[in-house]
Length: 177
Image (tube, rainbow, N blue to C red; front, side):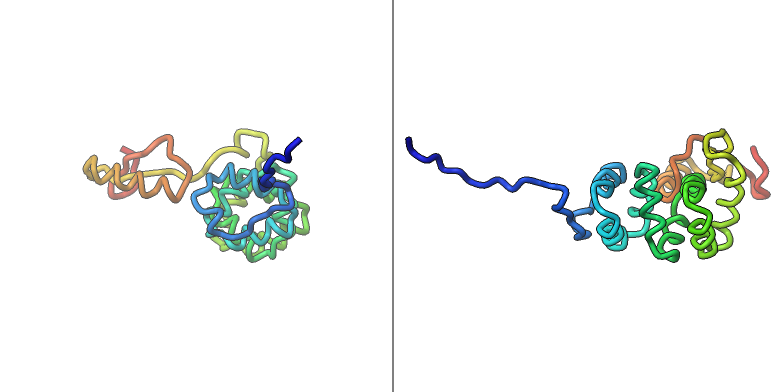
């Protein structure tokens, strides 16, 4: 019986962890979260530190609670605070709720005052209540904008915040129209 030509096909195993930022480019946050969850915490930290902060924050927000809690607890408090600052306030509040009191305090102290105030206003609510899942970021536009200007602003802002479900028109005194 002749030997068949057996070429080895690389098999992906959990030990094959890529921490090169180029391999994480253009990866959807949910997919990045799945990949991160398969890594040990030390590798997760390497990847997160190599990613742009916004991409890392969105990916961490998509992770399973226990995985994300372990990662956030292991990160230096400055790094964890930077990540929480770019997340939506409701996601940041949820993550801080998940952490132990010591980790929560050491990270919260590093968050910029304005961001801390927004997050703290949501932390008074239990994460499983309506108050705990609400998003306090509103999207308002000047009533005098053209449709093209409004669409352009919405597109720009949607990249930086959660997708707005409502847009409010206001006058020059921020009065709802």
